[in-house]
Length: 218
Image (tube, rainbow, N blue to C red; front, side, top):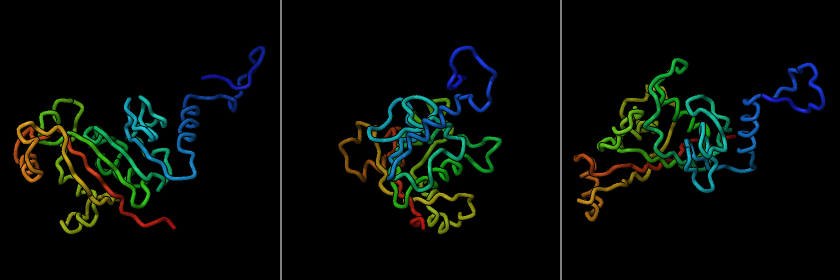
């Protein structure tokens, strides 16, 4: 904590002149997103923020310092054209005392809020059928490709699951793999997909593209 505009001997403390760490962070966060257009956002950027993106995280190279499990984020509605999330969704907790529902829905409702209509979200995460998904003791979610369809309201309705408490609505686009096993690396896409779904450690990560489905704001 420090004082603004002090010179000479210290006078009486003026509560209005105090600048707290929270004030400094809030000012930095506000400046990071000041723009006349849409932004590209690296969510949970850590030390490896994507070039050309604004990063949000608690530490690392973040332009916006914020706990991603504290809602809302200091980002305007419908303000993000592209988002990138790498190796974070597997860490989303299921429960916090202040949350009214599972953390998966809390997180994706917030991503949906900030995304512009038609905005794209690229997600990278360990595949459920790989040892890598279980190495890290802080991983609490083990994610199959079908998990992503639970973010599509139309799909939920067809499956009779539209009672799930979620506002998020994304179209699932391309789902691809990385860290492909040498035994299938030169095989066709069909063979690789079959191996991914039926064998263990055929791939290490999934790369998922989501498209935000919402109406243009009035």
